[in-house]
Image 1 (cartoon, one colour):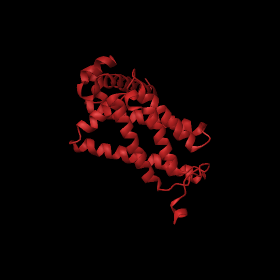
Image 2 (tube, rainbow, N blue to C red):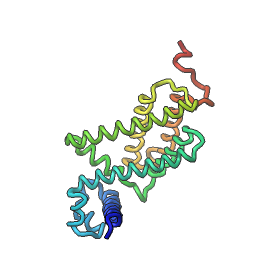
Image 3 (cartoon, rainbow, N blue to C red):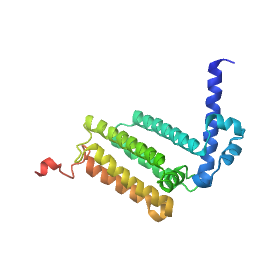
Image 4 (cartoon, one colour):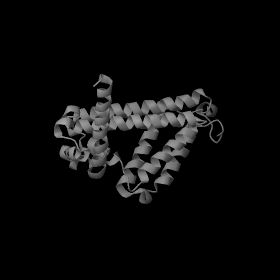
Length: 217
């Protein structure tokens, strides 16, 4: 068997493990899920699983990385098909709302919060969360800067500050959506409010409702 074929088979097995793990974590959460659950769901032997991921924690963190890569590819596709950065942002939040509001597939988000918030005393987890937070802030800030460079935005704050504000607003919507349900939290209204808030901070070129700080001096 050629090395290339061997690499392909290894990648297929890795994907099989992660797909099985996603189903298990989505159904049971992080704490209640066991390595045995993942092994049974994947239909693989314990030995094969251990060759890739020795612990449940390593599987979960690899799955988060996999989800991130999928989301980045999705955003890249949106960017290629969108006529403006603002259009991309709006489409991205609409996609997220559909994910958060789905009662049939809640995905990994509940398990994500369980992993990091329940385990906040674990320094390794806290450091991972800090890295993920900073990565997300920088990525969104980079997108906003692209809009500025294209002449779309004339923001009233720095892009990093706007990115942090958006992240905090978003996290509140997510936690309430999962805690009490999209209908009770009125998540669509909150997403619209978040977009309106972002628009007031970014001041798109076609939006002249609010003067910049320099104009008010």
